Length: 141
Image (cartoon, rainbow, N blue to C red; front, side):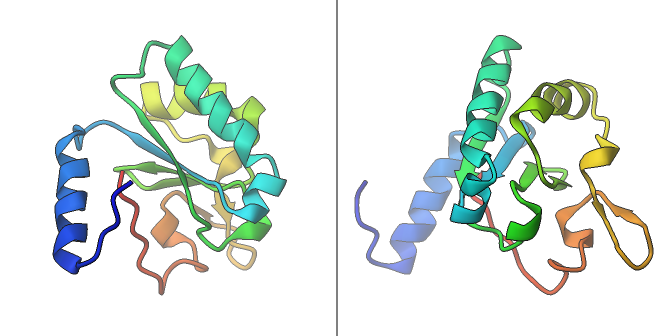
């Protein structure tokens, strides 16, 4: 990869990436940080790639291994954009259900959502999780 030396080069690189994808297509972001990898993220990434290929969705769904989003205790963390649906403690065995329910049918897999320990309320979006509320998350999907 070419080294980026200026903010303008970074902006141009971002625009190049964004121009190559359809913003309406889902992008599945899977944490590939050390904590999540120790909890099985590598298997989750491979399972998503295989399931998307098996379902014939390769041209319609992007997958990205990302750096650590910081919620290692609940990893592997999977966020599906553009809806920002956040699933926690995802295992490879959960992947077919996520692809079928969330990607194909636009339904939420409730058991993989964050549940607030105080209120008991489930959070669908990453930004609704108290841990992330004060953070600005950026992923180039």
